[in-house]
Length: 104
Image (cartoon, rainbow, N blue to C red):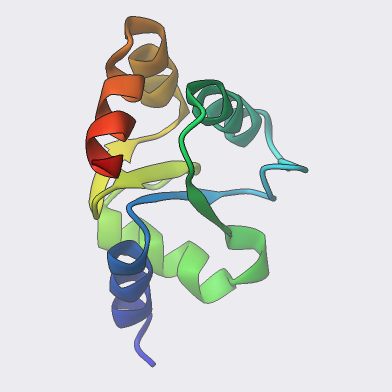
């Protein structure tokens, strides 16, 4: 299956999806760890894809999103951003509001 179709299917199947290095229980980079901490602090459910387990997704997502780094957070199929953006949104309260709206 084409990688773009796989990515699109993942995004359509998960309201909140984090493409990250490692897993929420064992993040394998500091930026992924910080992003997971912010998401966990909000307390809303989210899904994740460990990009280390799928090199095709890892490379294909850079082109799909036109965003070269990880983690990448998507809400309702829309790229929200990486670690810095997620942390800023968490600190301002925007992240909680966005995730509450996505769950509604």
